[in-house]
Length: 158
Image 1 (cartoon, rainbow, N blue to C red):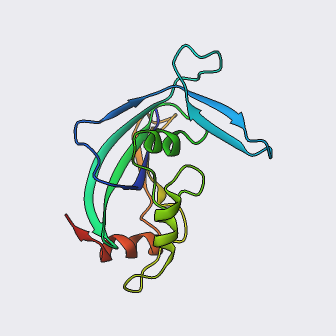
Image 2 (cartoon, helix red, strand yellow):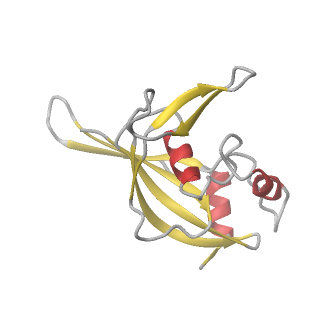
């Protein structure tokens, strides 16, 4: 069994009672051929089940807005699953150029107190798996890259 845990900074304060996102997804193409994904009813002919677990790590205020730093575990591995699930729950990932809040992203691109966010704040943070030979549980941890770490340090806890 493998656990993939990501850190995602989302717009707004995530509701503490919203811990499981179980919404089916469908791949589709835009008229220009770009691939996209959307939430569809479970009985949709192209629906693929997708399950995402969410835990609030920290709530922060930055640039006059509230954000939630989430620990996100995917139980299925669908294309754009985290991005679409969080956006469809009303809390898009900061900097997401496909499913995000485009006005907010423009604001975050502008420097505020020496800090900008010029990319999506989604980071593959922790991987846990059972070693196939020894049976030992292995955990790998990847620290936030400097630009994302800098943002979280400059934001104020709420």
